[in-house]
Length: 338
Image (tube, rainbow, N blue to C red; front, side, top):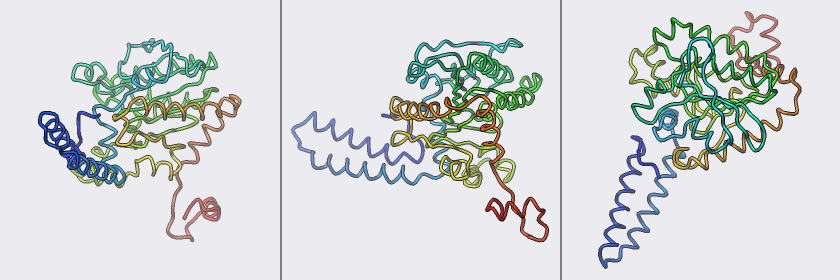
């Protein structure tokens, strides 16, 4: 059971405390409180169901950032065997916010790469709070090229608010590192499956996300900018982050509807942090299904499919039909524009 409750979970926490206190009271006395416990437990079940079946985009973002939520290495421990971590970008150093290496997935070799956050202040500083630096992207790309040579599929786990925007990161050309990853991932001739397991923020996420399949966990998000960043730009105040979350269309269901995501991976009721093993089981099933389908394609078909997937995302609108060009008119006729 989770030990940390978010703001919108406080009613659940308070009711759970009452149940715990009542159970302790019954154990230390001869008083029969079974009826009261039954009523409170039924109330807790109903309250929990009501809260988690009507989550707002902002509440889902809070769940994606839950401090007890499983991170990349947690899923690696549950899903893969013989994981051998490989370090360094062979240019500058090693970025601890990005981890990766060869492993076995259900007996088959695979390259797994992901962003990694920390659990406390010491580990968060070590992992740079999950903000990758240029050498992290260059390390990831080095490992992907290695996987391409070995003809081994790549799985990427994404959980980052974005690439590290500090001065040192800019000095080592963070934008160029991400751009190279975008270019080179399109050229790989192996299956690539990307999984958003928490935060999928900005170019920091897409730098590891150019895959043949993009899978998004139920309470994860994927966006061009964090809600706080969007609110700071549009409303000049980060307190409008909940409104920004509504406007950005960044939740799993909207991403699937818009054609950005290929599949939603369900989570244990209440979030992945409530049952890491079960969450990993759901991810494992999705990976197995998608990798099995992709392994049937040739290297050239994988490249073509990846290219077409990203080319087909999005469409444009024009209000005045008279000002539409031939391409826009044809798109409108096929239902791709309005």
